[in-house]
Image 1 (cartoon, rainbow, N blue to C red):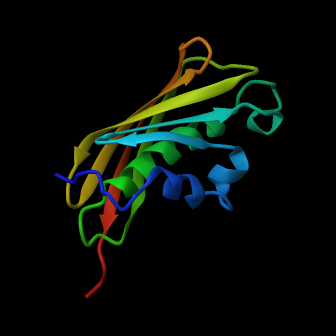
Image 2 (image 1 turned 180 degrees about the vertical axis):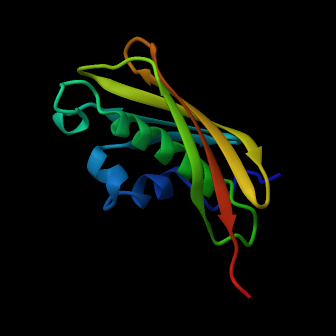
Length: 143
């Protein structure tokens, strides 16, 4: 079972996505601990679908980023990286303003795969907006 890597700091995770999708969406990494990562995303117009509801892809981006960063922080020694091989989300609600929060929790931290669950909530009320699960394949150097 993989453990939290001491070389993966909160600051490193915060900087990791600054010029990539997480940075453009405004995803903020709040904390990392053994088997858990927390994050948030202030809701802006760019996160909405034309129907004026929070776009499902915005919620998935927050959950997948949180689980992915959790995976990075728990990669086994010698592993090169990871890639998402499966994800599923159930959407339960929406918000029209404020921020959404995410708690990602490791369910399996193996040498070849990791499985993470995430719960996305309305940050102000704590109301659940989505349940998310993803499987990550651990990538090893070739040769």
